[in-house]
Length: 159
Length: 159
DNA sequence: TTAGATGTTCTGCTCGACAGACTATCGTGT
DNA sequence: ACACGATAGTCTGTCGAGCAGAACATCTAA
Image (tube, rainbow over all chains, first blue to last red; front, side):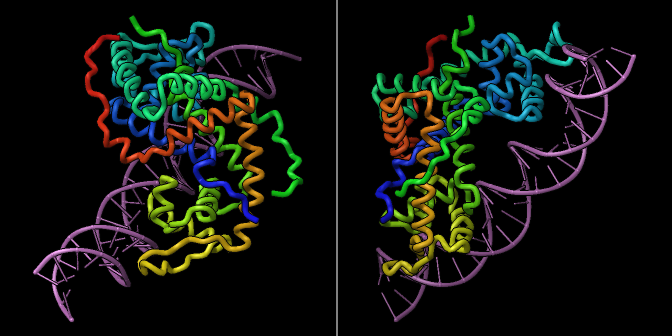
């Protein structure tokens, strides 16, 4: 017999829908920002993280390093970030916010906070906090570390 | 002053990371299945949903209808689904699982259940259930309906 | 100093996704 | 019965995002 699950109970399905929905409203809110929602994440990371070399940013945001190059190109062209030579490693560039970048980020944060509440509207404020916290805890584990600890391999029981 | 948020507290960041992580392990598990993880979702939907016309499937899974066409082409070529004429509407095709498709789905469901647990490993089983339930509730609202109810527009307070 | 590893950038290519057109069919109104 | 617009599915063409791979500068360790 086939199992009684429905699509709605598939984690991948829910994750995909929510991520897409969030992406859509985020795109509206950051309209005009180079790099779209990811450009925003670069700004956040550049503002808060200490070791903001390009590679570190790339892995934190989950993008290819070659992508990070032109992402930052555009943000720099827009005057929102600067590339500063890393005093400790002359190969690396540290990405720092300009004053304009800080102002822009401040505005974007407000808009996105509203947009996110909109996406999470079906939940109560308390539930929203729970969801945020849980997602964060899952997201915070290093993906490489996670894939290193082997997926269970005994799949020998029936449906 | 810039606000004190870190990237980790950004919902978009967490959603992206978790969705990517899930996608990656899902891809490993469904290796060889036409259409990858989305092919799997088609199988699930075709097995459980009643009105499984191609368009309905497409919007449920959040893909373009032209994409759904060749997605189903491939699954059909692999002998996992069939296109049956809809008795009520001769324009539409109902997508139904073949016997082979049912067996494959059964196997995939087991593998994916394990893989998902692996992604959610940082959470306790109870927390996993909570996360699943919350995500599902957010995902279940119709995206069009959601975007229809206007995003709040008073953004007039400072950071 | 040399050899290999690492950060960044550039080039070229591939593949997926969307727009738009087209066919067949539905449903409605007259 | 007919005509019209809307809808399901398919097909074609095109575009752009993202990756592999190479090149270059620099670091680190032997």
